[in-house]
Length: 159
Image (cartoon, rainbow, N blue to C red; front, side, top):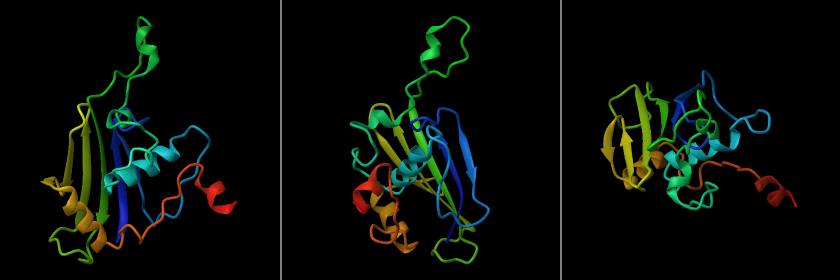
């Protein structure tokens, strides 16, 4: 099962819709400080069902939604206003039918509204969190099957 694409909108530092294409297998996310690497890793954790706000470096769900840029207070600024929701979608290649779904592409998505309401989707159909957890287990992405090493964890693991 190969991850083809990641789409983020309103999630943490990704105010505008951002699409990351993965033409081959992904093993690491690299980039300079402040480029959003940790937010990308957290977006993947979140869409796969992460419930711990501590693991997502937040205190409440609203912390995951873009809060607007400070430059909006300046007259004539080009800032981005705060968003009402955050959404993340993962697109998986299913042409080999590794999943028992009759689609060549499987899309797992999650939306969070500023009021705290969550919605989960598989191929644009509303599902329960339990359905997402069961699907990712079939993909081999269950709790014990993948590793996402977040910011600061390497030091804790090595020392």
